[in-house]
Image (cartoon, rainbow, N blue to C red; front, side, top):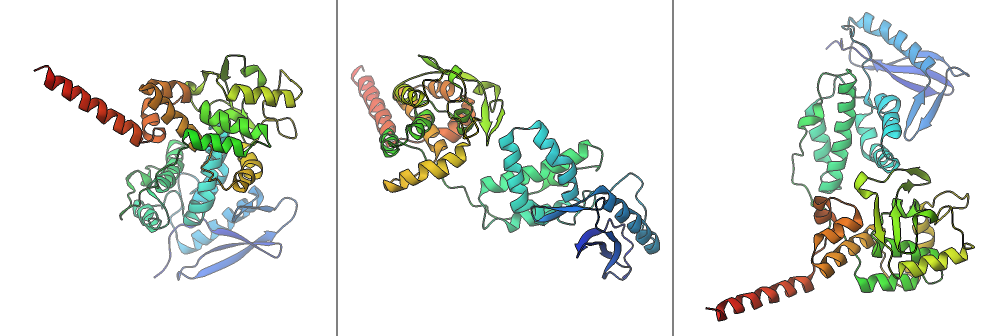
Length: 383
């Protein structure tokens, strides 16, 4: 069967020469030479893909125009038919980097590189169909949990929504994509108890900065980005003021407006920060936890290279700084009986707090049942 479909062609590089690969009129793979690599006609590797200069792409477009004309393919009348990877490289990823938080950009890039890049490969924005997305997500059911599948779907849909808003496509095929199989639930998230937190801080005794980092997460409920974003001017005798975040050395705003908050400074955080300040020469300005270049700390790297080895040496289980934050929320609500305490300290909405941070407690459940029993007995005696 003759192939008359309009094609963009795939650029490939072999031994310093560029070629374009396409399907001939018989549906068989074919290639044509484009040009030799030089200062203008270049490429660089990006993840698993190659990014080619505009000069190479212009020659590709000219050659493919001839190929499509020879095949009698219907020409495009409304501009370039982007491949999804090209659109990611040239449009969506730069937009995410410029407009969204560094942590969001990093998360999207990781999802793209691991899951979406190979799937989209030679697929174009215009030709992509809903069933392809459903088949793809369904194929990921065994290795991935519901939450990760949701993140993959969200990113894929976001890419096409962006293209839709730029007028490059007429609809978003991912809008109706569904997983056509039973999805595995995510494993329950972990949290630290007060005893576990105290044991962890004791295990970090040789590094007061590590103790302070963990204590800020457990006793004040700070996110890792908020810990990295702390400056000495944010810490006074009674309060810690959360004003910014920093992810991998990139300083930005807090996750949400609500995340900008003031938290009462309590022990043992107050004492650990005092010790750390003294070790830093009693400084009053600058980052609380500076890196070697006096920028904000890369908390992820600090945990991996400093904290984890010390925890392992003591035979303790490392649950993560977000587990410490969940422990803070759970402790606050259990101690006060008021979810507003967790809401104020962690800087989340009520819905997010209850869904992601509060953990069940057998002790609190038993306490509640005893109170209910007591109330029922008193009601019975009053009759």
